[in-house]
Image 1 (cartoon, rainbow, N blue to C red):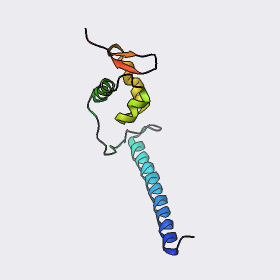
Image 2: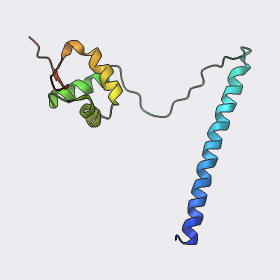
Image 3: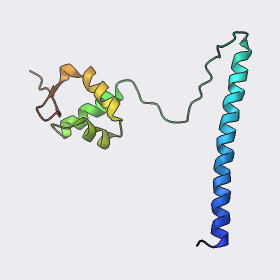
Image 4: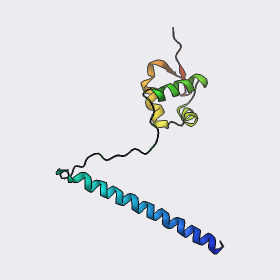
Length: 116
């Protein structure tokens, strides 16, 4: 059994999590109310805020995938994903857009097509 101090700490951390969830819910409701004050019932303005993450430049993901495939021939999408941190779904989309620059192998992996 945990000591009383640990139990109190766990309860406080759990309560803080509940408070954060409640704050997020209230903020979403407030944003919705502010957005619907435009006079258009049922429609709200876009209020999406940046999450503070860094965006990537156009074509950067494609370049990362090509570089990974060059360094790891016959790479499978899940392998590319684990090395690059790009989701498997994005990998499939990128591979489809790069179709003319890649060759699909029998094992399901990809290699960069050689330039003539």
